[in-house]
Length: 397
Image (cartoon, rainbow, N blue to C red):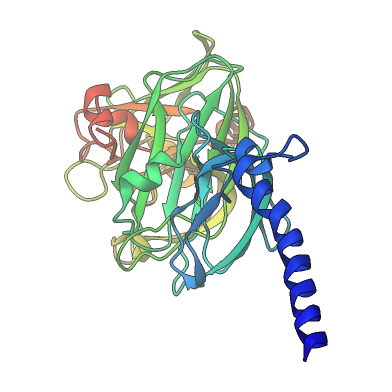
């Protein structure tokens, strides 16, 4: 029994000896202590929040990254195709927002580098996917890439489906010119009945102007019944020489002016007075040179008045007004208007004229016996509105 007591006392002494230095270390802080807890008392982990989050989330919003308890040092957002979504960290380092919106049917990987208040670096990763577009809106645009066009050519976008969110769409459309040309977008109804937005300068373009359209529409919602845009569009073109075609239907003369000088006068015959066969007046723009085409009066609501192949056809409106060769009307060139609405001339003059003009050249048509001004959506009739009236058609006004 005494042995047992001895051993008990010894063990108690050893335990006491071991506990003594530990108690001293925790209460007094010996010189050998690292003091790590005192140097970084608030070095808590940075909390990173990414929105949107989850799977099949709605598209059309920017990606946002926020940091709590520290700062963001960099953020990288990459889609499933390896394309980076650009953005910038705020001045206070607490947030980051992408320049573009998340697009439908895509997957995104987010990598956020942070630094805590205590200086500890950390990397956080997150991922999300967006729901695919139930309906896609597409665009038909003019002019085409690398074209050389006339001084009245507008930039024109026609949409497959209705565009209710006009302001949101217009915000994504950027025009860059080589000489800071002033211009404005205007929303109109295309001849086809579809929504359309055109950009025209305040005045005719200056020859030699280089123009770029960047329509960064991917990820933009058209609104109810319109669907999503799932791609961007871009085109570049150049303005050619200043050519203005003046058509006086009272004197039955067409004059081609180039750089302010008369190149040639051509006797013509316009639309027959007194009915639906009259020509339009105002400023029309040459839309396309279509060569030899079949013209059928039934397609423009004139019954069975004509059905023939026509040479050197130059389209001026969607409703069917052309300038073209009309040898069957030779007796009327230069003296009276006897066409079904088009501007007709001889084969020889039409062949020459066809080679001179280009899409985008304005046709300034005057005459007493005409049926009205060309509407903005009937071809490129925006020039028949005053500058103030055209600007009012912008969704950004």
